[in-house]
Image (cartoon, rainbow, N blue to C red; front, side, top):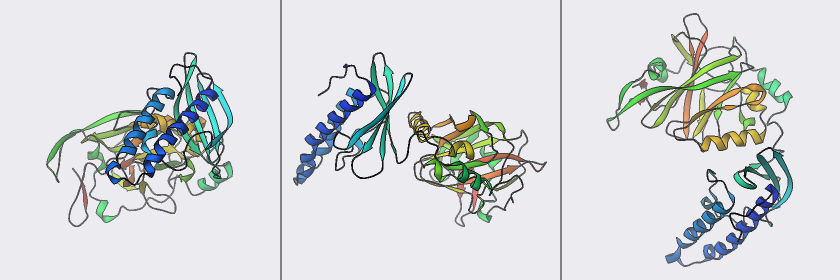
Amino acid sequence: MTHANASFSPEDRVQQFMVDYETQWHIAAPLFDSRDSAASRRPFEVWRELMEQTTRNHFTLTTTVNLAGVFGRPAEYGPQAEVFVRADVEGDTAYVITQMTSGLESLHEYALQREGQDWRIVSIADHYDEPTAPFVDQPTIEQNLTTTGPAAELRELPPEQRALDEVRNFAERDVVRPKDQQLARAEVSSLGTFVTSSGALAVIDFGYDNDDARPLARTVPPGAYPVERVTAFGRNAAVRIRFTDDQPVEWHPASLADSGHVVGVDAGCVCIVDYVGYASMSRRSKAAALTAFFAETRPCAMTFDLASGGIGVATDSGYGDGSYPVYWGVDSEGRIAQLVVDFMVLVNQDDDGVLTTL
């Protein structure tokens, strides 16, 4: 067993973690093999205790890595599961990359932070390609941009969504939830600045890989724009980017060229990004942004750096996984004034499926 106060290089810290993890795995594995139903909770209790100790030995106090959350076969980490590839040291941050030995073309990338003369593990990311490479190659990015433009058609809203009032959605007020009569305050707050260099935007589950992103058909002028969110009932109710100071007078689906205006969520979070800057991020940069996101206070909403100077926004998505509509708000001059993602927290649906804003 390794002592928590020992001093290691980044490579040694990871190696010692791997040895500890594999040792603990072999302690727990026979318990998971037991057919004694009366002791069915015992293996998970033992595994949790072992992983809590391993986490204290090798990880930062702020890590969000949950080693106890999964017990798999074979062991996920350890000298038998992975081999050292290289270490990249950038000041007080280091990245140790290992190759899995299971036959899968996958990598573990350990991110470490210097603490005095020591190094501690912050996070572990899984990659299937070189971590420093961009998610998407330039020809593919350029091909996807051919589906976008400032004059792309603005479609009509589906009938059941036409009664929604996204201007009211961002008005501070007291609201009552019809299903349980719970009272809450809808509050609007600034998230900072969104920056797009291409004007082509993407709205996607932040937990997906960046190469899943596709740009919305309509583009906006490149620039820096304010971002706001509204919260209620302890959740993010909606997020918007304001491109002009004027209020929208009409709303349209913010659609992809060959698809609809609803973003599917499987990881409980959504991001709005400059498509080019997001697709050009390295896997390492995306993993760091995701680690920072999950370390934030809930409900989270934060900005994060993209490639080429872009700044995106990521938020927890309302009630979590599901499908959420995205809208363009058009002002009286016919300009795109806002982009809104409605997380359906301040919305009521009647028996006919018609949606109205509380």
